[in-house]
Length: 201
Image 1: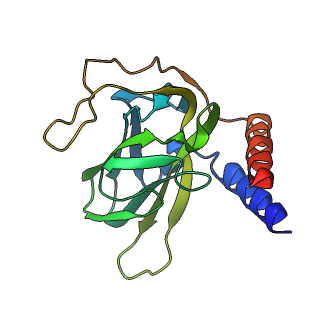
Image 2: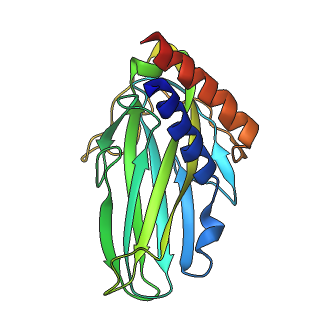
Image 3: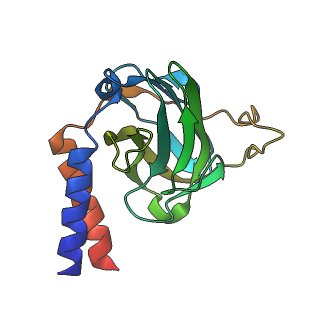
């Protein structure tokens, strides 16, 4: 029963994470970047990464009215990605109050752990908008930023820090391409892999 509930919850999260930045049109605009490359429209980055290889997610949000904007990056399970630098840890919100036509950049540097080595999994961005005096968000949505394939190899380059933010050129990042956002079939295929992983534990 527990495994069924986990699988069902993951299916729901994939379905709800189909919306993209265009959902912001009434409230503002959003630009999404993976390793400083903008992801236009509904595109999802599809990098091939080594265990421990850092990558960067950046989301620039501009609002048309005054809102409290919250953002977080999240994963399916727990411990498959680790935040090296950013405003919050994985699965925790960072919030900012913005005035009309003001922008804010949510930015994280993240690395994959060996928890999903040899497989692929998504990393998502979730956001919400709150109006002043209204406890309920007027907008609460999210989408997949990248569908990462983690190899069994280990990254040997330099890990960026706050003083040395860019990824070291000693070992360039793996090739990253962009593909259309998840279809339901792709999501379900990923879910099957996740379900089998949980069932073995």
